[in-house]
Amino acid sequence: MRIIETVSSIRQVSQHITRPLGLVPTMGYLHDGHVSLVNRAKSDNDSVVVSIFINPKQFDLTEDLTGYPRNLQRDIKILEDLDVNFVFVPEVSEIYPENYATYVDVGEMSRKLEGSSRPGHFLGVTTVVTKLFNVIRPDRAYFGQKDGQQAVIVKRLVRDLNFETEIVIVPTVREYDGLAMSSRNSRLTEQQREAATVINRALSEAIYMWESGVTDSVTLRRTVEKVVSTEPLAKLDYVSISDVDTLDELNNVYSEAMISVAVWFDNVRLIDNKVIGGNRLE
Image (cartoon, rainbow, N blue to C red; front, side, top):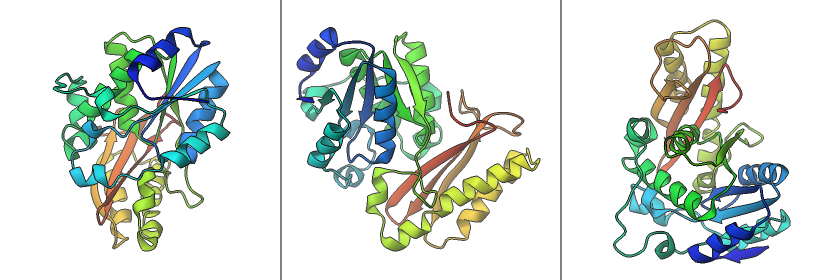
């Protein structure tokens, strides 16, 4: 496995690498959810690049950026064991040179849900994804369904800017008790970690209600709110039931839709989603 730190070097590698090439973009502190992305990429492609870059442009709070978990040495060991071909670990100055001024805006869908709660978040996401696609030129790129809105936005980015990269969405990997795997889970206290299982219970209850014949979005949202409210340590940020392609809120759910939540546990904010009437966002 080769570790690459500069844009010029990864660009040169991408020009000579055996294809098809799969890219797994990460911010590090890898867990089994990331492992599932890498394994899927390895099964689909002849070569795999994993990027590890904590993107400062997608953090709206300085304390969230500084508090984001890091363990590069551990990440490298995990990727070595997975037999990844290349790991791209650039410094911030490699991605955002001095006086950097250009951003990629995917429009209104970037300002809903997470975009509303975290202004500017998706400007950072779509900009760094565009830059990674530009320098690595992957044939396929792999994202987790847990970040459902991000998956929808990246697919729109690829369509609108005519990238030839295929976007592959991999199902959410969950802990034994249903909590979606996330690097931020490591910041939960023992009590918060136990309380966080309320997220999956709330989503599952809404899915059950829909499967039982409830199509009214107001009722489904209230179901999620009610379940989350049973946990004193949880504070609901938002619950959304949206179209899986446009992220527009739906009044009624007759076919596939994405139900998304964001929940605070003190200063730790977790997101999750499930697709009503479907298994993933492909």
